[in-house]
Length: 137
Image 1: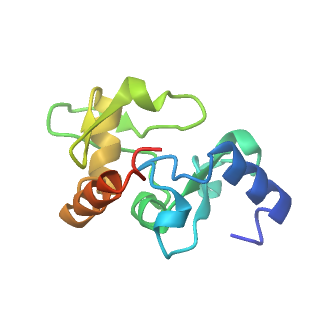
Image 2: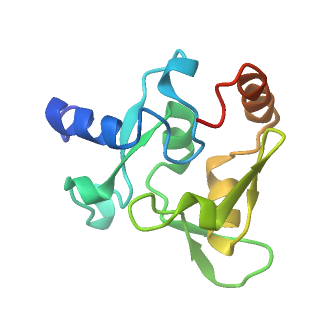
């Protein structure tokens, strides 16, 4: 990622996100893995390196998202786009309850599916973080 995004832009993106993953909302201090700058629309899909196309992400969310822009969900025969942290409000699409990130919209359903946000290990981690007062921040 360094070849695409400068350290100063990376720092701006991290600070803007309050050092939390913009998808699962876990703070970087609560994971041992280095957080990454994600191209919301990947370069291969004509995304840019402009800050309005960059999100701060944990490695799990970034790896699961890859270059995906959307997916099909069971309730729809149409391609549903993924959550965009620059244009969408998290609280409009998602809600949090007892470790799980719940969908309020089809966009949230698609994002939860592709990013595997409710993998059992991730639910347990969020519950532990909540118990010690670190989730949500």
